[in-house]
Structure formats: C-alpha cells, structure tokens
Image (cartoon, rainbow, N blue to C red):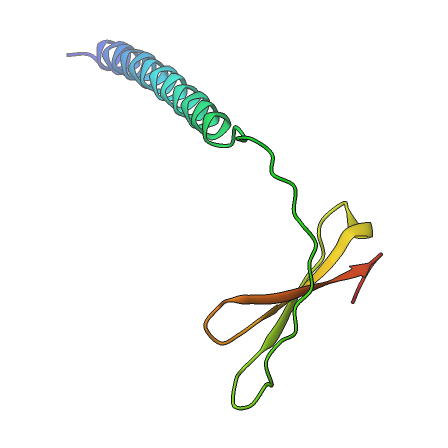
Length: 106
C-alpha cells in the first residue's frame, strides 16, 4: 500500500471520528440543556409560595442565663442592607429572639 493511500485512509478515519465526536458533543449539549431546564422547572415549582402569613411582633422575658450557652448570629443580607437582623439562639438551636440592627450593621 502506498503512502498516499495510507494518508487518504487516515484522513478518512480522522474525518469519521471527528464527525462522531461532534455528534456526541451535540447530544451531550442537548442533555445538559435538558437537565438545566428540568432543574429550573423543579426549583420554580418548589419555591412557589403558599398563603402569606405575616409575622406578629411580640416580646417575652428570657430566663436567667445560668449555665446556658447563648449566641448571637448576624450577617449581611445582600442588597437589602437597610434591614439587618441579629438572632439570639440557645445551645439547643432554639431561637430566643432577634434585634433589628438597621442599616449596615457590623
């Protein structure tokens, strides 16, 4: 077999392999798009809110902090810095109270 024929056969094999790879990539791309759409649809369905129940403000007196571990949890709230909150929790993870910390609390 001559070198020209081997080169032509190699080029044909490369072209066939290239076409197969491109087809597989198109299929994989379609699967990824399908999975992204499915995930988006599920997240929209799962986050559909139910009936709105407004929070009722109240106060209560906390027991003496003898031997209990209490801690404050606070953080920035993205673009709504004007509505900062700090939460008081006990060692069991029960929320004991909260403070409105106002604009850009540190």
